[in-house]
Image (cartoon, rainbow, N blue to C red; front, side, top):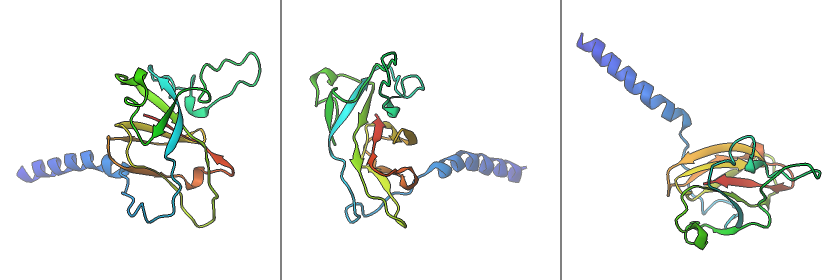
Length: 168
């Protein structure tokens, strides 16, 4: 009877750990020694107090533009507030001092892709919870403030400008 209980306990423990192992990322090492393009600097933002930007209706990560006079798009990264990255939003704009909801960040960059090379989007840290998009497609999520994380984006890169969006 004790062997059966022990087997059940081990099985339950394995069922709790297994999903974590499936989603675990290996930590990228020697970041400073790798060829990199820094995305530090000024990023355009959208303040999203109701978390509307992740849904299909608003979809801030698609960065839609009106195509005719009857198109209804009630947001834009361009012409709006900007924040310096790395940096927290609470101390950069007085209006955000006590703000606790989501902010969408956007910045465009160019990179020359080459065969046989892998490309990663690496974050030193994001304030607790983040959804990461590249060129309008979600590439992943991360939970845990002050911890570095990365996503391989080799297959998501396109010729010309790249547009990462981050909801934090």
